[in-house]
Each structure stands twice: as C-alpha cells, then as structure tokens.
Amino acid sequence: VSGRPSAACALVLAAGLGKRMRSALPKVLHPVGGRPMVLRVLQAARGAGLAEAVVVTGRGADAVEEAVRAGLGQQSSFVCSFARQEEQLGTGHAALRGLPLCRAQDVLILPGDAPLLQADELRRVLEAHAAAGAGVTLLTARLSDPTGYGRIVRDPDGGVRAIVEERDADPGQRAITEIFTLVACFRRDLLASALGECGTENAQGELYLPDAVRVARARGELVQALLAREPADVLGVNDRRALAAAEAALRARVLGALMEAGVTVTDPATTFVDEAAQVAPDVRLLPMTVVEGACRIAAGCEVGPGAHLRDSVLEAGCRVWHSVVEGSTLGPGCAVGPYAHLRPGCRLGRDVVVGNFAEVKNAVLGDGTKQHHHSYVGDADLGAAVNVGAGVVTVNFDGQRKHRTTVGDGAFLGCNANLIAPIEIGRGAFVAAGSTCDGPDPAGALGIARARLEVREGWVARRNALPPPPP
Ligand code: UD1
Ligand code: CA
Image (cartoon, rainbow, N blue to C red; front, side):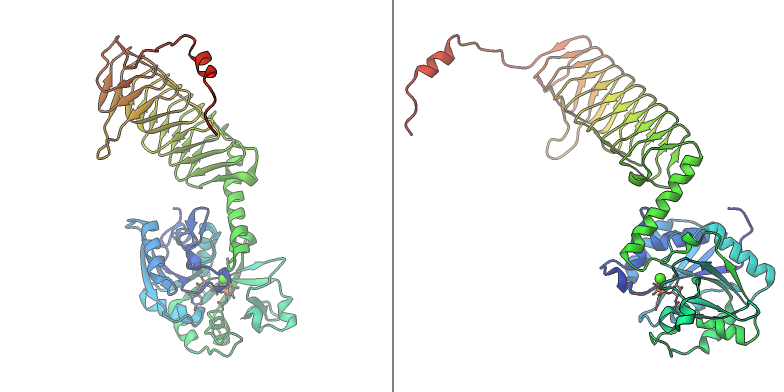
C-alpha cells in the first residue's frame, strides 16, 4: 500500500433491501469474481490506505457481518466495526447510524453495491479532499446511460449545487449524464449536521445522503467533485443484469492485466481467473478454464480446454485439460487429463502423468510415475517411476478410518489390483493384475492373489444344444 494512512474512516452503506435483485441473499453478499460485493468495497478502502471502516448493516445483518469478518480475517492494520440500521429509511439515515462509530475527522462514504471500485480512485478522492481542505469531495462519473443514478446539478459557475435522484428529477435533469457514484468524502461534523437538516420530502420518502451536499453548499462549505477516470468502475449493482455486467467487467479487468503481462488467453469470454492467482508469462489459458483461489501457474503451462484449478500450484511446463485440480501441487512437466480429478492434498513430482478417469486424493506421486487410466489412488505415497495400471484401487477406508498405502520406486501395479491399506508395496515389486492384496509385497517380489482360469472345452456348444427355456 503506497501513500500514508489517511485520517478518514470508511463508512460502507450495506443495509439496503436490494429489492431489485429479487433474492433471498442480501444484495451486498452476492459474489462478483468469487467474493461478496461488500468485501470488494472494503478491500478497495483498505487498498486506498484507510485503516478503519464502519459497515452499516440491516437486511441479513448477521450474514453480512459474518461474511465481512470471515473475508477480512485477522488484519491488525484494518479495523472494521458494524452499525445496525434496523429500518431502511434511506442512505442518509444509514450514514447517521454509522457515524457515531467513526472517530476520524473525515468520513469516506462508500456504497456496498459497487464491486468494481478501485483503490486508486478512492485514494484520489481522499487526497483531493485533504489537499483542498474541502467540506465535501464527491466522486462523479459521466455515463452514456445515466439511468437509475442520482444526477449532478451544477450552478452556472460550474460548482455542484445539488444531487437529484432519478425519481425526483425533471426531464431536464434526467438529461444530465454526470452522475453521483455514492462515493464521497465528508468532514465528519459537517455530514452529521447537514443530514440533520435534510427531510424526507422526495419520491421515496427517504432520508437521502446526497441531500447533505445541497445543505453543505448552501452553508458555503467547499464542495468539490472529481470525475471518475474509469466510469465503468463505479457501476452500482441493483439487479441481476448489473450483477452479470459487473462479473464480465471484473473478468475483463483481470484477464486484461494477465494478457498485458504476457499470458495467452485464447477465449476471454469463457476464461475465469481469480485476481489472487499468479500466472507467469507464456502460460496458455485455453477456453472454458476456471482458475479459482490463490493458484500459482508457472511459465510454459497449458491449462485447458476445460480445466478447473482451485488453490493449486503448477510448476513449469504442466498441461491440464478437461480436468479438476484442487488444493494440489504439480511438479514440472506433469500432464493431467483428460477427465482426471486431483482432490486436495496431492503432490506430484516431475513429469507425472495422471490420465483418463483417474482420481487422486491426499497422495504423493514421485517423479515419472504414471497413472494413465481409470483408477483411484487415495491416502498414498507412491515413489518414482511407479506404474499404476488401469483399474488400480487403493482400498483406503475400512468404514471407520482411513489408512495409508506406500509404494516403492519402480513398482508395477497391475490392472485391477486392490491394495488394502495399510499396506506397503516394496521397491521394484510387481503386483499381478487382478490381485486383491491384503498384505505387503516386498521389494523385487511378485505379489499375486487371484483365482486361476478354469477352461471347459466345448461348453458353449453343449449349452446351445439344450432345449430353449419355457416362455
Ligand atoms: C444511490 C444514490 C444515487 C447514486 C447511486 C450510485 C441515494 C439516495 N442515491 O442510489 O444518488 O447515483 O446510489 O450507485 O443515496 N442502503 C442502506 N440503507 C438504506 C438504503 C440503502 O444501507 O436505507 C445501502 C444499500 O445497501 C446500498 C447503498 O446504500 O449498498 C445504495 O442504496 P441503493 O438503494 O442501491 O441506492 P441507489 O438507488 O442505487
Ligand atoms: Ca445502488
């Protein structure tokens, strides 16, 4: 975080009903890019250098507060507290609920439903506010379609006179394309006293935060406005269409940054990458790929088509296609897929192959080990250059507890072998196809546990000669 800590406290308005979402989930908890909107707003505030935030909650307050606590985690550098607004009587009313918890000299009002806000933009507002010693610094934006937003009404001298909500605007005001973002820095005492003078004589019968601007201006306070550099970033999400638009915009932002950094994204429309991911230059992300959580993907990897990675590490030159990889680490040059599933806790060495319909869980596969086909390896430690045949199953669960399987370097596990854990297969040992092994197979030995083939010559002809069964 560059810039000095500001004296301002963020005041996030997040108590609204979100009626237009038509959702059981509080609006500000709808995720964008995998994180609740309100958390994104708080992260932008923290990124802007603020150390303190108050979140005003109401609808679904418990859930919102819990999500914020969980999302922020333990951060001694950022303190977040909550104020309740039991009845949603407007954004100004919400701000009044939160204000007593803000002790800083200035308050940065933030909407809980603007997930695309960026730290830089907020920092600009804070800095302009401090530099001018302003009473109010508004963030505004020029939109080609201002529908639904409050309009910025200016005096002939260019100063902001008032903000008029769409529903209260006359046709002339509706034609204004400069809108209020609901991002505004106020001197704390000014906001409190100005809101105290505002009424609820408007189309919604609510106490509007934007009305405080009119009062401040009338008192001769310095009210300044900053135009957003990126108008798309101030989007307020009021309905599901806007939610999808926010998702698309965020995705474009993340993928754009990756492409600028040298990552190939062949189909941005079907590629989803968490911004917490680290993707090296010359990685190729192919269509229908999802990279979730804090993944790290090293140079030369090819991910997709159809790959879903979550919280995983791919060392250089790996290939993952039509497969799911969760909570696992792949060494250099590994190949996974198609149709493989690496569940959490896997560690693959160098040049490991996990192929068609293979499932691996909480297992170590040493360098050069191959698990090409239909098989399950769970709770296991496989050495280097082990061959896992088709249909091999580690029988790791006895109905009560999980047990571990150990396989030495160079061992050969024949097709359809069942390894009943706990069990140890020695270095270079061979397990015959179809064996159900209930004990160790020592190094260099052949373990075989299966019935012999019994051959009955002429059996088919004799059966066919029998009279057909009655109908
Ligand atoms: C608001 C602004 C509008 C601005 C737009 C920017 C007002 C009256 N209007 O309109 O000028 O252009 O945001 O997106 O402020 N909330 C509460 N308690 C309430 C009402 C709302 O906490 O009683 C919260 C909501 O949860 C939401 C935020 O305030 O996060 C904004 O409320 P919303 O109803 O979405 O306002 P808009 O109609 O979008
Ligand atoms: Ca809104």
